[in-house]
Length: 108
Image 1 (cartoon, rainbow, N blue to C red):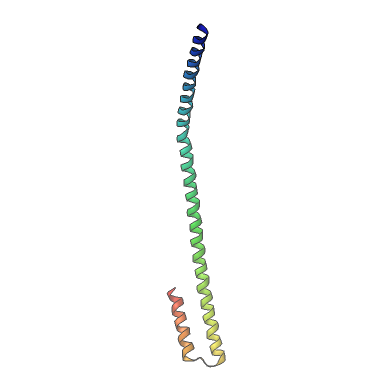
Image 2: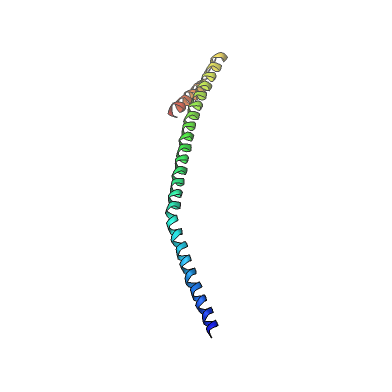
């Protein structure tokens, strides 16, 4: 009878010690989670900063492209005006079109 009792006793000790080990691992995991969440927060902040910089660069590029479009439209208007005067006659309709396009450029 002593042998089965000894086996039961060893089994109980094994179960109890394994429970303590599991609890210690859980506590260690909980303690390490704040540092992981802080790292994730820092990473997300860095990602937001990069996204904001990308947006600013894209806005700057858009402004520059708009300026180039305006400049090209002005050059086109000048070429059309020269073409009309070279041909010698600019019809009233063509003059009106040129005027409307100039107004459109100024409004942009």
